[in-house]
Length: 332
Image 1 (cartoon, rainbow, N blue to C red):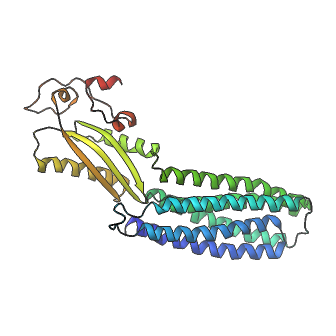
Image 2: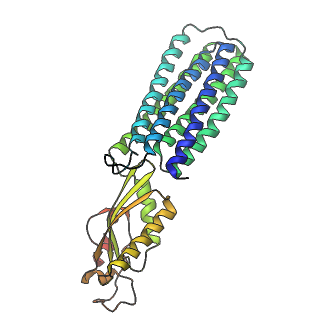
Image 3: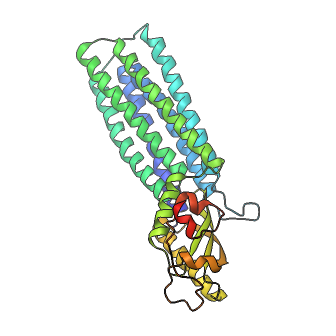
């Protein structure tokens, strides 16, 4: 099963889980009449809505490339995540409004013991499904699935706070605690939504993923092929679960087309084995020049014009530059 299909199938589980937990929270609110539980249920309406938005986006993202979308449909995941983040923040603001309104006029609370039990069950389920979603999303480079998972986890954190507040309310009978707890965790929900929107905008604008670049460069530097004299002008763009990698690879000038292609295949295999199969490489090969000898570690080379001097350590800074390296690059 490919990554896109796996993401889509798991998002179905996220959507169905959201519906189930929403029903349970409504039942807990009916039993208790707690504004804190009501606000938790209100956030679940966003969970359900955003889960189905994420499901649709992953369905679109999994579509094959076509003439109108030569790079695929993966960008829709960023739009989906932006909508979801906005909905999360809106839910947080609504919770703040309800909590402030109820703070000055606390309502009588019903069967808190049953309400606490039901809400605890939803928290456990939310966290487990959310953690799996984030793990799968990061593995398959799916921002939509990561956003769904983080949403469920943020719901868990707010639910835990609400549970603590309800226990205190149950023990102390201080009705204002109900609204106070809801208010505190509403701000956490708003912040989570903001972070998801920020990450989605980065993807839409093709902002460089520094963490991904660091991992990629470290992998390439530690596993250099003997014919990989230099690597530069490296760029990575995310389209849903697919990574597009562009770079210039300097190889010995005397390699024929078939031999040069084998080096690209080795590079492709290395990246795919470590970052998943959804990788598209666009590699421009450069033949080495005389000054390349000083940084070339290939020992048996009949065309060598100068002795090896220094190894250029590949870093995000110098590997992303469109400048070919030489012996002086070591000190840069």
